[in-house]
Length: 120
Length: 110
Image 1 (cartoon, each protein chain N blue to C red):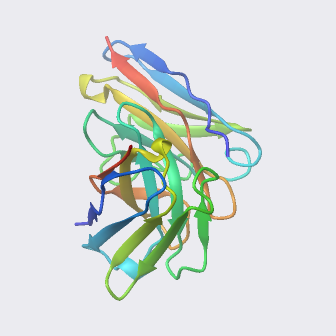
Image 2: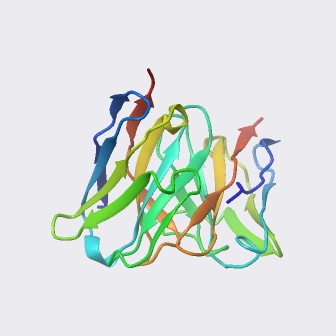
């Protein structure tokens, strides 16, 4: 059974940084691409970033490009999202998702999310 | 990277069929056959219902079907059931390792 457990969320002031992590289990982690998707409570889904199985293919939403960095550690079955220069509009529930394939194409299985609140 | 366009809400009675449209551009929906649909119940994580425009993951009822014409993808739910009441989101690959979601559609089963 695929299991994805996000951590690292919390309350942070604008301009500060936060690092999210996702611990994966139940599948061969280094065979699959991974995604970060966020959702403001009560609002829609927004794709944030994706990374291919080998980290060779990485993409970002325009809204976070230059501020967020996605990375993965296949030896530790973990996915990370380094979020710098946070803004109030980054406040959301952040989901980690496994792709159907090894490249960034189709988010398939999702974790339960970790909440990030950016406020002064 | 503009969000795909979905109707804010649709509704139908049990047993009826409903279709949710998802309109993008030639840079996303129209350019790739990597459209997916997700169902999300309140307080829950999204669940993949359709991928590659029209394929169903194991365990998804065949009442759910997907299609695409030009820049518009569609999700059809036939034989509506009470448990289908949820939010539905489309998603498309948009090139250069990026994805874009639709704004979401609230399905109400009357």
